[in-house]
Image (cartoon, rainbow, N blue to C red; front, side, top):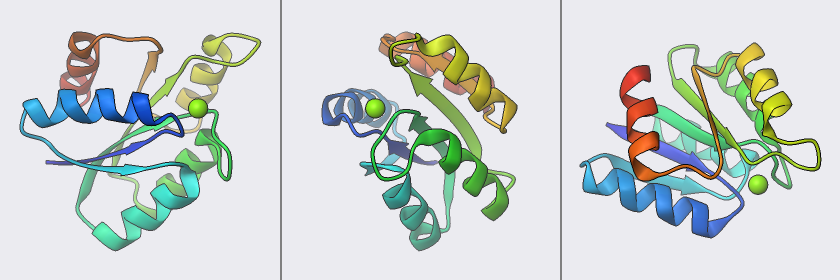
Length: 120
Ligand SMILES: [Mg+2]
């Protein structure tokens, strides 16, 4: 199963990618929503997207809405540590625009895999 990770923080991408590769998922990465949307169109068989919300170029909420227009069946998990106001409001918004799951940063690899399995 192919999973796309979108996050502007390379250490977060690396942590998620390492966790998922150990579980035999195929992982591709993007630094922001714009790059993420490009990858979805290039790679046709992305089943799940894990996306950060606060990013330069194109942030996560807008990205989720555009993915939903392109492909309603892709599963989306929103992840956020929030900004000054904390992650809850961002994650609620992500849920409202079509995310299938939300996860508050920081999270452990176990928490990530559990949310992923609940979503599949
Ligand atoms: Mg970010």
